[in-house]
Image (cartoon, rainbow, N blue to C red):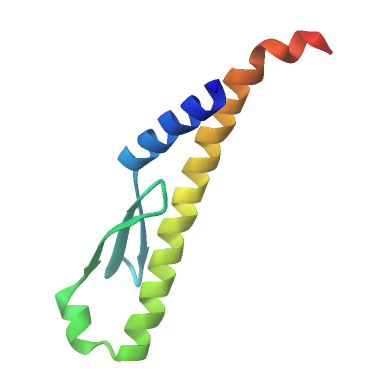
Length: 94
């Protein structure tokens, strides 16, 4: 029961943490929350004017994957902290 409540608290906290990934020197930026939900995509208008479809798609994938990797790192850190706090008192048992 306590674990479920803690997990819900972490999920809510992860919703408020922003991460981003970019490609091509910031010409494409993807913002997401730490729950791996993409919030926005930004593409430099000058880059967009000259980019071809394949290049744009490839760079979007790179930026999205970087943002999701950041989200995963934050999520793992939060879960590790929760686990440590929940099990911290058990260290003296063994």
